[in-house]
Every structure is written in C-alpha cells, then in structure tokens.
Image (cartoon, rainbow, N blue to C red):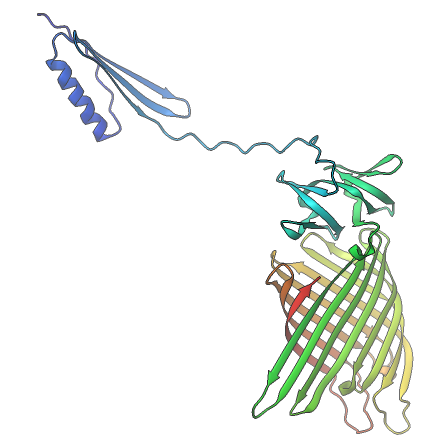
Length: 415
C-alpha cells in the first residue's frame, strides 16, 4: 500500500519533556499505515507568548489529538477606581468619613483642628487622621465650623474634596481650602482633652531616696478658642531631708484671628521653688501668637507680650523687702513634631524679662520624647531646664545656683 507523508518541521520546544513526547508521537506515526500526520504551529506575540502544537493521527481504527501549551503569566491588573462621589452613606445617627483610599468609616467626630481629624469608632476606638487624607465627610449632627476669614457656621456638615456644606434653613457652601477647625456642638465635654504623666524613684539601703515628678496638661478647644492648663512638679528627699520641691502652673487662653494668628488673653503663671528662694512668683499678661509652621506632622508657634510680675521670696536679707513686683516682657515657643506615628517630640520654652529686683531674666524649657505604648498609654522622657539669672540671697546668706536641670522618666495617660 502506498503511504503518503506530509511533514513540516516542528519548532524548538521549551522543555526536554515536551521534545521527547513529540518524538515518541512521531515514531508511532511513522510505523502506522495508512496514516496522516499534520503538524501545525501557531505563535502569538501580544503580551503573552504561546507555543501551540497539534498532532493528528488518522487511520481506520485510531484518532489521536495531542496539544502542548506554554504561556507566560499575565501582568498584574491595575487597581480599581475610587467609589463615585455620589454614593451617600445611610441616613443614620453616625458620622461617616471617607479616606483618600476610598474606605468609609462610621463613628463619631471629636474635633478637626491643627490639620488633624480626631475620630472615634466602636471597632477601631480613637483614631487620628491627617486632614489631607480625608476625602469626604458626612455628619447629621450639629457641628461648630470656623473658616480662615473668621466666618463661623453651625449645623449638619457635608464635606467633599472641594466644598464644605453646612445645612441650616438654607444650605451654605464654603471652599474646603478655607476650613480652619470643626468641633461638635451641644455637648461641652467633647471640647476637653488631656494627658497626665507620673514618674517615681525609690531607693533604700545605705541611702534612702524618694523622688516624685508629675506633669499634666488639660485643654479645651472650640472652633475659635483654645484654653490650656499645664502643671509640672518635682518633690524629692535624700535620707529624709528634702532636696527639691518645685511646682509650676501655666494657663493660656487663645482667641484665633486666622489660621496662624491668635491673641493670648490672658496668660497666667504660678511658680514656687524654695530652693531658689521663691515662695511664689505670679506673672500675668496678654500677647499675640503666630504659627510659624503648620503641617500635619510639624507645628511650631511663638508668642510674646507685656505682663506684670509679683514675687514673694522665701526669706530676705535684713532691710530687704520680702515681696517685690515689676513689669515684665513674656515670650514663648512650642515645637510639636510627629517623627513617626508612634514617636513624638515636644519642645516648649517660656521666658520672662524683668528687672534685677525680682530676678532679671528667667527661663523654663522642657524637651520631651513621647512613645506610644498603647493608644492611650505613653512612655515619656523629659529634660527640664529652669534658670533665674539673678537669684536672690535669703536670710541664711546662701546664694542659690541659677540653673536647675532634671531628667524625668514617666508613664503618661491620654484622655
């Protein structure tokens, strides 16, 4: 019987196994009579390269189809687009926030100030978001809203990437770029926040030492005002003899004029340190403040203004008054830097320039590194510096040293 062969050479296959398998098949075909062998090679080059071979064997009894496919993986798909802006959260009692990633969160707005949104969620607890990361916001509750030009509004708020809409009798729209601050209305407790830090050192044996230090900060914020109360104190004793006992309380009320400029009306400070021959020193005044840097991670402001100081010494030299008063020039600065999401650096400075009769220039500075242990518990390491340029000599004739330095390690609780 006459046998007809039609052969087209196969292209090189990519694996040794595929080559051997094709060879076995061709050998089988050569032995079969009658037989027809067809080799078809298709090469496709778009993004995927595919080698596809089909061998067909036909005789009166047997028909065999053989195929080999080799392909490269498809490239990763592009991420899906953000949800459309016309999606509206459910009409319920919750505040809703959409992040720039497109995710929606429901919960309760605590405040938006200093380019940060404080938000509370039942599942995620307290969260803080950079305002630049917030895409949209919906709140059915009444919020107090303040803008850069001093305009204030009150009502339910809807915020889009471009606008702030406040619903009253009529809906009022403002450019989002002018939004300065936002706080809940109607519940005054929402305006308060604070932090307390305590450090304790105990030593027994050949030397008995007790050292206690504490820092506390309480703040009340509204859309246009900020009230701050600060306390720092140190008490220590060595072998039952007191070696330190100083306390400082600062109070400041700020009235915002714009995003960066504010009035200080008033500023008050109380300080006591018998080891500096100070039974009490009270300073009051007014001033102006300005934010030099105002970003989501770094804030730096300075203040200055006139004041008046009353000093009562712990003791005095014969013929010297126990109490003196004089005018003063106050100046201060605060730097708050979020180095990472868990590490914060705070540098505060306050100074007062007055006459020699009450101590001349005084300085107070605190540098603090704060590490978040949990959402509410922090580990604080602080270095404090106090200086009185011209300390007054007491009745014992001893002149106090002008500088005091302290390193304080403590645990802080945010509330």
